[in-house]
Image 1: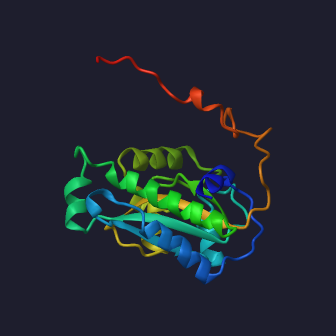
Image 2: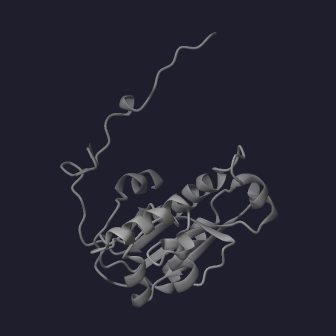
Image 3: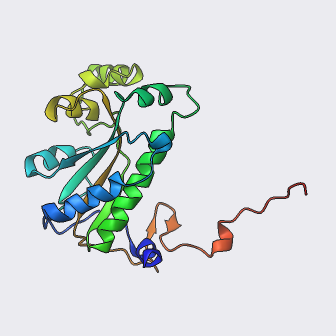
Length: 216
């Protein structure tokens, strides 16, 4: 059954607009909570966005999604002592929370598919920006200056500003990724469809296996 779910689950970007029930959404989040975490740190936290006015704002950072029911943010709680210790820059384990995030999201999207709900994993960080039109030369220069010096929290068009001001999320939580959920409207034909430069349908297994020579 799990192998069937893995192969049938698709990244969907156009949804029907139908809302997911609270019970089903709780099942999806619970699946994420039960994913393994490095050192059993259990640092991941989830923000559930479902109100239309909030979805309208957050989707300005990813405008190609339509008709989603819920947008889930996956955050890392940096106030946990072990988080502060191992996720700091230059630590050998600094990427561990990203691995934990991936494990949690995979649990969530597979559980969702199992109960008839579609999803798409979103590359979303505090450094994402809304598209801005008709900026003057000076405004463009100032925007790039703020990007270069990581001044996201004072840029109203950055996702960090949105998190801290619109959603009132404390700075101890660092965003790792997002996932949209809903009931899919457009489904790709894996026999014909491409995303990026690759066919969605996977090649034979031998294409992905690297053979190495090693000492006996």
